[in-house]
Image (cartoon, rainbow, N blue to C red):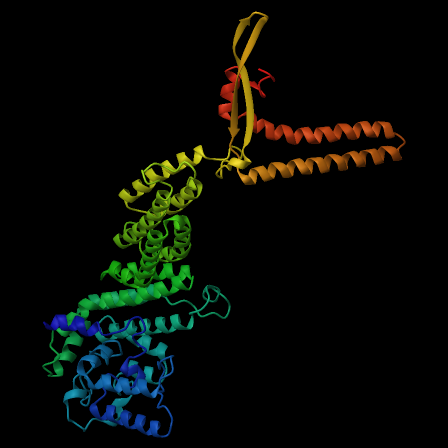
Length: 548
């Protein structure tokens, strides 16, 4: 492997976004210039604390927010003894000024593993070095003072520019952790922590990526180690891998904000990621979406198996799939833009699964000869609702056309079997209304006169159970309302001494109430197209005369 490739591999060992939680220098409180003796001294303190049942918690201004355990300290010390892992942690911590001479006792990233020098100065184990004012301010807890000094020196000091990026990144992550909670707590409540400015964070890292002085300083530190395991190409590898590392961490935070229903924070952070202008953002977003994608794929696979096993329950399976998948699909849509191939693929999988379940259900109403059943028909209304629901989720042209074609067929079949009164539900044979008709067919002259022959027909107006029930309830209410009105009018009229007129008025109101309900239902019935066509063709309402 080349040194550049090794650099990418080394940076790939970080765990974004919370990469500072395990940073060995942050956990131990040591500076990047810490020597072997400094590491040993901290290690001894950890061992003594363990024997006393205590934890040697570091005390410095940027100590981890999460509690530091004895195991975490031991792991951090082990990382410092590995030159490759130490290099990663050193990159994401504060460097001494690149324009001032480094202390004689300062160690390179490889010193902890290779140097047997035990003459390092005891003061090298602090966060600061004696001749670096910014690090001295940081060691004293003056974070703003350190930031101000680095900002003043950034134009000519690559280390200062790097430290500004690290400080902003570390602060944003700590703020992010502190502000994690319900959306209301993160959107401006009086005591809520402010949201981090991720645009500033990524702008500072973009400046580091462009700053040759910063990378020259890093290359110089690696080369000064004199360790064959740390080639000078490591800096170039880390530089090339840094954008993807930042994007991976940012995408993970965006996904977490979407999961927490904090969409303003998620969208703001995503916009900041797009402004970084480096790395493969699409790959980072796909990786962040992978748990959601896996869930939708699993739901589709389960639904497909269920539909194959019990096709008669296809609509139930499809409806349950959509109810389970839609919230997750909304999360995916927040991260992956329209036209993204991964988004198109998962949407097509969902759409195809619903379409398959609907078609398998439709096939259960086909007999062995391949002809539609004459006794039972599928619920075309429900099939249409499911296809209309899934159609907007599909983005590929081919599947969109297939769903559209099947939806057209289903809608035509649904119209043919629709209740004439509501047009929303399938008609019920027992609830439908029959209207007998007749007309004169021909006349015949017989020995005793003429005989008229009639044709008879019956038109069935399709009606669903709900509409039949509603019509019956309206009739009952009209009866009750008419009777109540009659009684009330008669009572009032009797009190006024006009009982006769009251009875007359009550009868009129009663019949108006009855006829109004009857006429509203009859009006809709009389406009049924097949009935209208027969009436225009000289058919007459009612059965043919008796005896004819």
